Image (cartoon, rainbow, N blue to C red; front, top):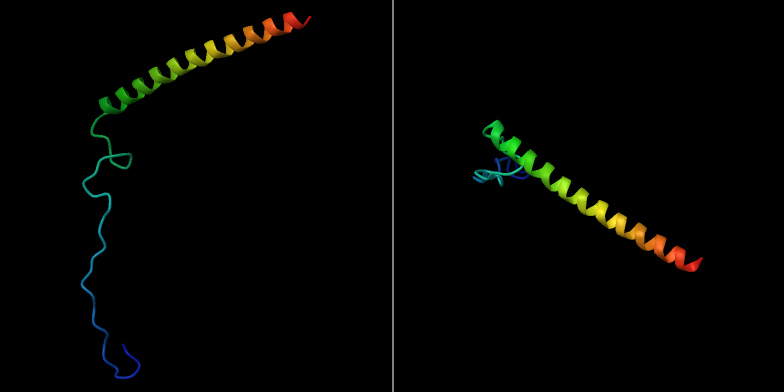
Length: 73
């Protein structure tokens, strides 16, 4: 209410919208267990590939370090 005339303020007809309505994504509930398990298997496969690459890189670095160390001695 306004202080001066004691009449109620006009109400606005706005509604708050839902930004995520109708969109899939991390917040949506999975429809079945197969989709989730398939994603889990894909992630595990990708992590195994990354692990193999990392292991090879570490091996190359250690070989290079051993070679340079032997040349210095």
